[in-house]
Structures are given as C-alpha cells and as structure tokens.
Length: 256
Ligand code: ADP
Ligand code: MG
Image (cartoon, rainbow, N blue to C red):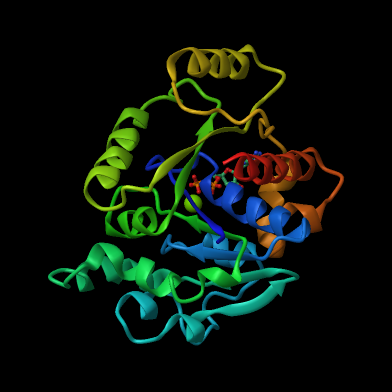
C-alpha cells in the first residue's frame, strides 16, 4: 500500500508548496506512481504542476462538500506518473460548509481510500493554518513532513504544530507519524543558515532529512511556467536537491 505524506507547517512561506510540488514530481520521475493533493485554497500546488486551476471542472472543494466523487476530480497524468487533485480559491469556503457535518475530519480520508491502492505515494500540500483542511490532510496521511525555513525564527510555532500532530494521533488517526523535518532555503553564504540548522538539530527530537534544500532562484521561477523544477531546470541545485530528497523518502519507506 502506498504512503500518504502531508506537507504541513502553519507558518506561511517556509517552502511547503515548493516541497510538495517538487517532491511529487521527483518521485514520479523515479517511476513512482504519485497523486498530488492540493489542500491550500491558494491553489499554488495545482498551478505549479501545470494545471489551470480556474479551468478545471471539479476541484477538491467539490469533493469536500460531496458534490463530486474523487474520480471526477482527478486530473490524470498531468506529468508522467503524476495525477493531481486540483484546487482553487473555491476551497476557502469549505471550512464554513463543513460546520455541523458529521465526521467532517474524515471527508478527504474517505475519498482517498477509494483510490489509494493505485499509488505508491500521495503527497498533500496543506494550507498555512491548523484548520479543518489541515486536519483532513492529517487524518488521511500516514505521516507529516515539516519544511523549516533556515531563518532566525525557524522554530517558532513548531511546538504548536507538534502538539497538533499529537492531538490528531490521540483522537483521530493513531497511525499518524512524524515523517521528519526538511530544511529549506538554505543560504550557504550566510552563517545564519548554518546556525539555524545546528540549533534545530540540537533542540529537536524529530527525524531530520539529510538533504537540505538550498535557496535557488530557479525554484522560485519554475511555478510561473507551471513546471516542477526537475522539468524546468534539471541541472539546477534545486532540482538536484529535490531528487535527493525523493531518494531519501523512498529509502526511508523501505526501512519501515
Ligand atoms: P509555503 O507553501 O510554505 O507558503 P512556498 O513554497 O510557497 O511556501 O514558498 C514561499 C516563497 O519562497 C515562494 O515564492 C517560493 O517560490 C519561494 N521559495 C521556496 N523555496 C525556495 C528555495 N529553496 N529557493 C528559493 N525560493 C524558494
Ligand atoms: Mg503553500
């Protein structure tokens, strides 16, 4: 059975979407069958993988409110080996629509269960908050991958996130694991990045991925072309590092 990984951190701008897009695409490039699920109403994962988010018939919103089934929302083979559940700003209304719905924490899980056997990996991009969309991602997932930006306030909010993961484990999804922490936007020219990495290593019990994602302008450019980094600029440091991260994720899965 495939692994479902939620990419989460309630801080905005830490590299969640960039990691979700490029990990999905690099896993697919390594012959893994991947489903990318966009749970952020901004829809940046959707457009970053080349799907025109405002021209799709159904989105994750329709799935969440029960208007469409998962097969009708799927965009198939957007890239070789990669399917997408697309999202746009409509999803921002889902939070309200879920009020009072029975088992609202498990809507996504119920739908993904219907198709998960078709995939080696399901990667879920979460919004920058600990809301019901994030909870739906966490009840669906086997593990949570946390991108941490190499900046001074890196650890801020992390204890809250870990607490949320523990609450979900206790009450909603006892199988949920902490996949690990990935450092993003590492700047080799500054001491600060190095200090942040050392400091987090000293203070965090969680698994930390060996692969560190460097700050690389190509990673910031690629989404405007609707391309993941391994297609936009395969020789860039960003592409190389996300390929290494995909290797690490695959090997970690084999050990378990
Ligand atoms: P989040 O999803 O956590 O809000 P994003 O992935 O959208 O964060 O990243 C925030 C901004 O930083 C985006 O403009 C993105 O293109 C840029 N960015 C992310 N990772 C890198 C990186 N490694 N190097 C350069 N720019 C990056
Ligand atoms: Mg994002």
